[in-house]
Length: 494
Image 1 (tube, rainbow, N blue to C red):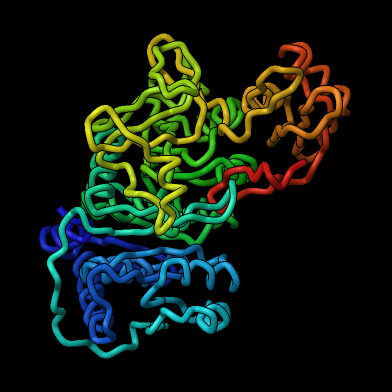
Image 2: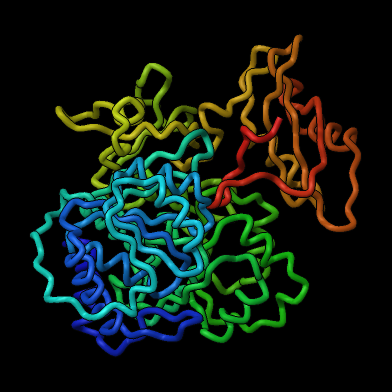
């Protein structure tokens, strides 16, 4: 089973079913598949071959989905890129990929032209490809599931973006495992306002095609009223999101005016929600099952918290999804038992092949596993587990604050600050300190009309945390710098 087989099989079984709906209109599975075949022929006529990297630089729209499947049909490799990417970064990625082709949208042509002038490997750029004449029948080189299907660039929260190499086997395995617990159905309507450039958004389309559901594509969560209007009109049943998006929706005063009764599943990934954010979501959508999940681009998904566990473990990201193994390891790489704190290690067919042409960085993350010859993913994320094996995120290894000779988890301090009424977000970092080595500093975003003093925040933390964890400094800000998928850029704070 290859990724594009999801579409081809469903187009044969449910040709008239609506696959995609967006501003351009509704499109059936048969139509999407036919358009992908036509574009594949055009790409082939321009010399795109098996193994070539094709950058897809487009907003969320039907054309982007068609482009994804057209590239996969040829046995080539998709590299979906965020449409907010600017010229210099786009040029860097095209050169890093040694991309053969760029598929883009007419609205992005200015950015593309500047990047293409610096990208010598790109021999073909296709804009508004629906105007292209039908090509000759595609001659396909038979791909296998060990071939690369995608190179997805990380958000760059800890440095220069890296291309994560994923095979068809990696991605089909991940989709099957996630579907085993989310159980999307043919009658589901999935609202995807997450960029297709990120695996969380991309997999909404892949998993929908697997079961014959409908995806409603929106370009972003930037206009929450529109999201709610579209969700009500389309009778959306599944809403995947990230904390900034859910904050926009739940803080909207007119939220209760929209009939979202059909909504049955809400999922959160990329970054953790606070207890207050979870409470607001559940109050707004009491009929929906809420799944808190953890994953990385390097392996798509690792854990999920069953909705029935949410009241017992609101801050947990759960236990492992099907068909994978994970454990916590200490600094020497030794496996830890339940109740310990350590780095999360992941083993399974969903784990990436490595970072594109970056062997040193790959070796830091993929290390020998239990079986001879295999490699497992060392995530770089620190978790603690409870007695039953449920996981709680502590910090990125690089984000741990060392103050007064103790290790401080930023997330633990943030969770305490988040409990204050009117706090929308908080981020905690370590700053240089002549006495402590590092001092704890908190950046706090307050809701409209809410005021706290620095002393009040520090006092609140002092009553609930060990002394070495209490912030020495508090700064109130209008917003926190984030990556495109909602993770806080801690390096930009200080």
